[in-house]
Length: 117
Image (cartoon, rainbow, N blue to C red; front, side):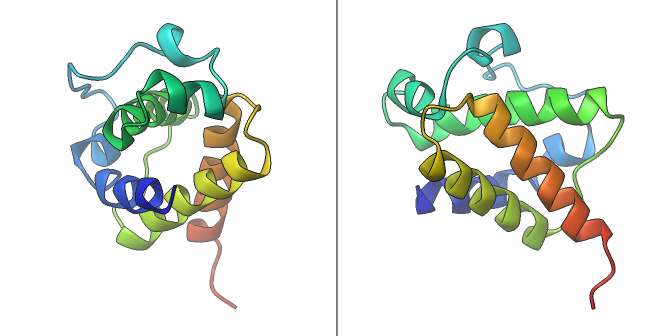
């Protein structure tokens, strides 16, 4: 899962992060993946980090768009997001991946937007 965190941190700095309307054709639809738990998505992806990430990217894109937000174009933000998904899925592997993505996204955005103390 650490590889997933690193992949997410790098990929979130892709055009997806800046352009919420741009959707690469390789991404699954939200309807295809929204009902899957962390474990189910990992199994469904054939334990492929890339395929797992595509589901996370779909979910994060939906959540960002619904909140009219964009993901910060910062490597640290992507790294935090990936690590938080890893922690959330390890802590509760049977929770919906969408829930893990939502939690990780909220925490990451709050941390990035909050001034450092």
